Image 1 (cartoon, chains in turn red, orange):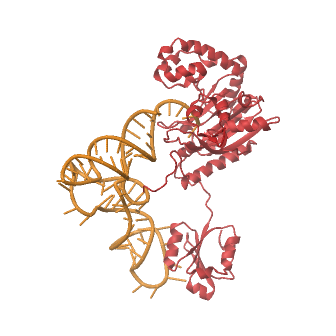
Image 2: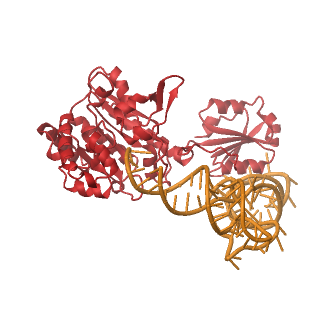
Image 3: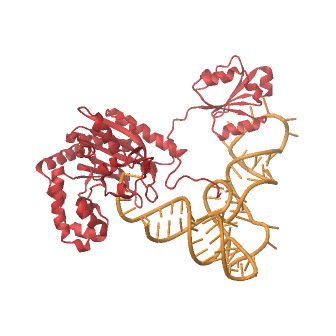
Length: 415
RNA sequence: GCGGGUGUAGCUCAGUUGGUUAGAGCGCUGGUUUGUGGUACCGGAGGCCGGGGGUUCAAGUCCCCUCACUCGCCCCA
């Protein structure tokens, strides 16, 4: 026991039902995103740390205390990616040409937090990003895709809700930040420590503080939607109209600002309605200034990320997430029966899920087939070997038939 | 970073106010007349009771430390 090597804290092996659910989620995700013309991409899991300190923000929790970073045999600081949007933005910054670049990806992300239910140090996300398009239609479409995927995965309406907000244009944000800072400055004494720090660097993030005294102060704070420019208001209204038009329920939440610094305009989050758990399952928004922060180009973008484990947790354990193929067990009483076996070659050549099992005890062979949920057993025991025959039994309906070895065509008998 | 809970067989757990060789179910394995599987019955293997220290005639049980897992807070998908 003490010698066992366990997985690193906060990491998990994915196997069995969990793996089936994971594959199920991937399947729906890529199918639906492909339908909207997204192209899949895989970017490296390691990146220059600078990518995230510039994009996500130096003083976010993610960058300041949760990143796995190391110096790579010299002076390059490398890190395990804590999220994927920055990597895709990096890719787009050097590969975008014109029109829309629609990207979908998935993979492991790493954040060094205290693990708990629905929060792991290595977790998995699915992401879609649309880069290069300013139209509010895209904001709607990206939310529509999210909603479609959750539905297709079998989540029902009362399991989750959609919250949306507009953070306005970069100019609106600067403007509103000033007004908010002025207001909050009057209450410096009562603000929490973290909020005080944010007051200097990024006052917007104070809005989603969960500190009680902060909340009291924020109750009467100026609201961002009162300070949006006319253009920003129209932009946001268009999105809401499209959502309503397509029966996507949402709730406006003026406190929703997201934990990353790069968002502008639309911010949204799908949350589970279940109490007592990490409730954000999918979240994202528009990031028109992000690419300019990490490159010399200025390209708008919008996207979201969803936590695979968090979605997986919401899926029922009692469903079958795999289309199991018929499985066949080729069982023989002695290894020598497998030598120069035409049956074996047929099995290898056919598109059949199979296993070979050798045991002198016939009963063991059947028990094995049963326990491992094989649908058919192909048996060559001593008698069959002598008479050059072979037994095929359907384990589901218990019917069985004896064939001559040189006459059996497996693909014809099993389907 | 801060709090709560739990560590006993491969897995899920019992172990009474400290008291001899530490238990159950499931799983694994052998058998119930020699070639036919989900049931039934009988047998078997398998535990430094997470680790270290302490109290005691005696510790799985009480105390301290430590490690691991887990659930919350913060934050986030």
